Length: 426
Image (cartoon, rainbow, N blue to C red):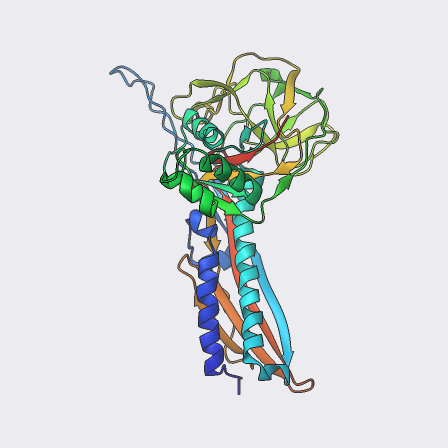
């Protein structure tokens, strides 16, 4: 016969879930995708999610020759993260129900933190928009720069979020508290009394206590890359790979590209850089913004001269329809040795900003048997995250074992709709 939970434990679990839901602050800021759990299991917990189409318009009334094929771009999304907290209590410790509740509360706090960090890590490590600020955080001007960067590249102006480290957030609040030299100004008073920034320059802002840090770039100032057509560092988007020997194909992840550079010595994952002569394009009009495109290094260098970067360099140098539809850069000049300029010049925290639709969380579900000798309870939060709590008594040691589990995945669907802001960069 299986163990069962006492009424007190059920009440405690319900209270823990309320706290867990409240603490999922960051995961509530991103989009949620709930897939079929059986289908996910049968596909190795991976599903390909579609990226939005970007249409190409033409002028005039004659449409002859304008009926091109569109290339559907997709992104692999996986439910690949299971986090759990385990603890035990002996027969004497179980006399104190309050102690048991505290351990359970600590467990769900840690799991909520894990989920929040996973969401932020996607934007912090994979977002390719980069705002470099030479001084400390001051407020409106800093966030307005991120707003302008997104607007110039045609990123949606809806549901924009900015998450700031505690020090950077408080620095902005300090600036806002001085916005009015007299009391009675709502924004100034909130900044002074509660260190509150709130909505500003098109973004909802949030304070973090676990912001990631990025080391200063150490790749040096002499790295170059070829932007000539013959350098083959342009990218051709594709929905599927070319057929293999038996006609087999596979989906293509179009978020990254492998490029050849002069050297990868001391280049690190997360480094941000620009390329001389490679300007960002508006994703809809395809026109140059007049500003250099920012790129991120994804993962460690692949060899002494090859890097995986994001986003890919889609310049239409290959002339295909897929390139024209997805142009993201305009080449104002080409060179066999275009200079690479790193942007993260001082080690500091990463402050991620993103559109809600660019990051997704995929809630998973654990099918833990309830008739195998352990007592099991589960609940689902408002944004679909399941929490499973199980306990089992060990008669040999008179100890009761507890574990609290959750299963989820996160994905950055569009790296060009999210990025990071770094302060004090010389």
